[in-house]
Length: 114
Image 1 (tube, rainbow, N blue to C red):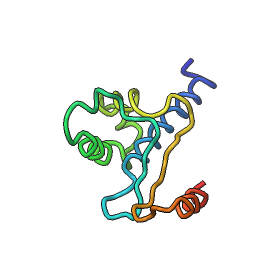
Image 2: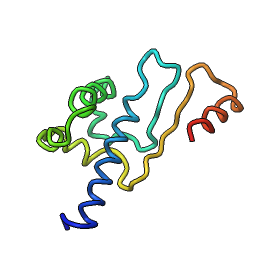
Image 3: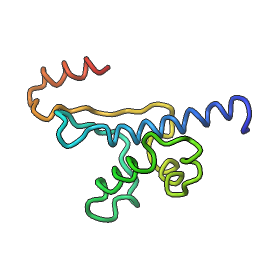
């Protein structure tokens, strides 16, 4: 239902998908780390070369820091939020430091994040 717990769960799912978009775009090219959500972008978003750059640009332009009312009005954004991210309320992701190759150092980084 759109009232009570149904509405609360719906908002939780939307928020989880917004976090998914954030994890896709959080690392900039000059950051010392990369972030990879474990849920891959659906195949229909991967049809052309450079799709991830285009997708990140769309997220930064139309989703990041936008009011919820604007997100709900934009068909492209609504479709993206339906298609991408987890279908549960849990985001899983990997953070990799660009200059770290040793497992011990990578594990220390992961422990700091978790």
